[in-house]
Length: 158
Length: 371
Ligand code: SF4
Ligand code: SF4
Image (cartoon, each protein chain N blue to C red):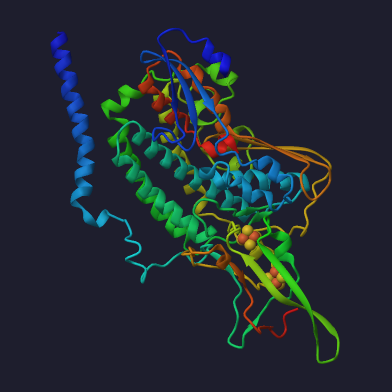
């Protein structure tokens, strides 16, 4: 009796193993089910999700104009001091002083991609870009100025 | 620690497992006292990934501190964020729009499935099966893509804010989730076929790491680990938040108390999560995805506590506010820490080879333990 049970157990063990192996064999013979992406070979066709948070950028239009008013809401929203807004005073044609942005300094190496700055910006001046290949040889290169040289604020943005 | 070593008898062997040992998850250091192959004691040494999150939170505002909690239990980041958002909303009496509530619960349940899936793969790999890991990651990838579409991140989401969510769901969200559910329903059976019914696996799980209901409660276990010992403890049932009181779902309870029971709870919980998602997916209400809130949030003076059910158990967030823009003190009651404390009790007297099964079914996430 013991022997019969023993053999039964061995056979049932073999059966359960074979059932498990059937799955492996199925995927071995069905290449369509394989979903691995061959990065970096597929760099040309690789598309990340539209909202992927890769880096904070400031979009400029064709006249080199941005929407940033220098209100520093993003600087206050950022949990780890990634953004520094350096403001200056422009003289408007009417001769009035107007606060404007001199530099928006962004430290990519500190950024946690939490999106809080973009969420806080009242004039939609910054957004998240989908870049992700950020490695450089010197970390100073990771400190960026988001507004382009000689850029101006768009008309109508307060 | 020093005197403890002094109490070992002749012939005892003390071995260190981790942090660089491949058998451990994350960076957990275990000092194991062995007598032959039998475990006499397991001492977890913590702190390798301590980032002082609670202290950090004291200098962050009520909008900012949420993002740090994604880095505690990174597999349940949505649920951690959800708990923080709920706390602030309750304290400030912010009414959350119906749409935001449904979106949040959907995200929570997707997170739970993703987390359980990763656990399932990692656990099977710990027990020596390599293929399940890739199967689990393949399905989890679909959830990650859904998350990436809507929240822009795959792990550290920071999607929930006091008052709702940061952005509306992606137009493709409902379609993709439906695709995922259709596929996942088939795959769960595949999981059972591949691992649950496997005889080697069963033999390594049955009657391993048994913990009685009373012991489990006294060690402060929560979540699937406690429900595996037959205790009903689902925060979603007892303290429902958002729309959890409007959906039908079953609280999964297994009475075995062993590793297999804890395993079965998680497998069955995935199916329940699918059912919750199905109930909500077709009727996402229209409207705002975020309530209007003040730019600067100042919690009223007092103490606040909010609990949520993460994939690992009950996460409690305790805030002492002095009425300022930053909390005076924050304490996180993380499920992983309490669950780990029961490991020594479970492991005593069993063989060293079974330790991995116990650790696996406790579903330890080390950053959650250390914070
Ligand atoms: S994404 Fe977060 S960490 Fe990065 S700059 Fe914006 S607020 Fe700061
Ligand atoms: S980027 Fe937006 S939030 Fe930051 S200073 Fe400019 S306008 Fe203000």
